[in-house]
Every structure is written in structure tokens, then in C-alpha cells.
Length: 241
Figure 1 (spheres, rainbow, N blue to C red):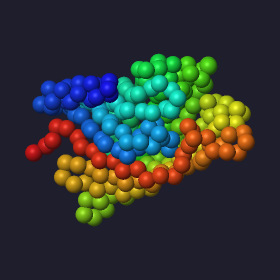
Figure 2: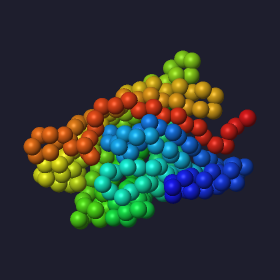
Figure 3: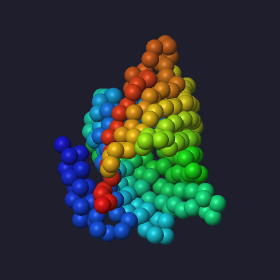
Figure 4: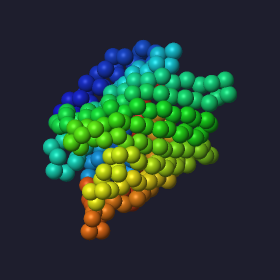
């Protein structure tokens, strides 16, 4: 599979650059690829990897990949490329602004660009994302969409942490789906627990949100925020001694 070849390339790149400051790679095995409450793998497992470079100035550049399953669409994987600037104020308020390009190489009509800005303090982070063409050319025209979300990672004793997230998807894209009886602006949320075990991070989350309904009131499987448990197992390279 092409996703395997891409993953192998990321491993080689991470290995070659491990000695360079600011170069890192994160690998994740998850029971589902959850994107804003909606499964991207038909609730099947996902293998995901990122390769990142961070400059001392705060500038960063990276790529992230995952397998996907969109049902009838002939799309097997997603590769995202991103770049931005991050930093911290004197009051320990963190900030992050950047650009993210979603690509689906089996179907370029799905490709789209998103800009984002985030603020963080201690264990809380708030973020606002915007695309002027959410879903790419597959929507038949430029359809803007927004996503506002907040997340918290609260440290607990014995290497555990409490995880929480809530997000709201809105804008013309979701309003158009509402008029078509195939969706609407919606809320997604998750609650869970994390655990650090040496070089590995484990997370178990309960994910839920507003369910989409068709005009006849029945559930729409492709755009469903069906409640589910998602387990993820991750590690980051290079491993420190």
C-alpha cells in the first residue's frame, strides 16, 4: 500500500535527522481516526505518522499521514502538510498560528487549505480554524467552514492525565448540508484518560457529538458522530536517553 511506502519514507527521514536539533517524528496506532467527531476510517484502526522540524525562532514545518476509508470514495490515505509560528509570552501564554494543507492523493478534488490560530495556558488550549473551501472541489464550489475547539490535558498522579475536548463546526459548508437535509452545524466532544509509560503515551477517549440526520430523520452513516471508545498508542522520536 502507498501509505506503507510513505510511512517507510518518514521513518528513514526521521532516522537520518534524529541527530539534528528540532527534528522529531511521532507514530500512532489508533482504533479509529477521529476528525472533529467524525470517523475517517469507517471506525477501523489507523496507522499515523508525522515528521516535524522546529526552528529556535518558533517557525515549524511538518507533514502528517494516515490511512482513511470514505466508503464509496476511492481514497486510501491522507497526507497533511503544515507550517506556522509558535511562541510563549512573558506571562506564559502560548500562541500558535499556521497554515494546513489537507491532501488526498487518490482524489485531489478533496484537497483543501485551512488557516488556524491557537492560544494556550497551563493545561488548556483554545483554537480557531477556517477554510474558504472546506472539502475542496468535491463540494461543487467554494464553501467556507469554521471550527472552534477547546481541549484540556490535566496532569494526575502516577503518570495519568485527564483529557477533555469540545468543538463546534459551523459556516456555509454545514449550512448547505442542513438545507440539503444531509447534516448541519454540530458539536463534538470527548472525555478520556491518558497514561505515560516510559517512551509511550496511551489514551482512551469516549467520543460523542451531534448526530446528523437525513431529511427523513434517519441516521446518515457517512457523516456520523456515533458514540464510541477510541484507544491510541503513540511514541515520539528521537528517544531521549
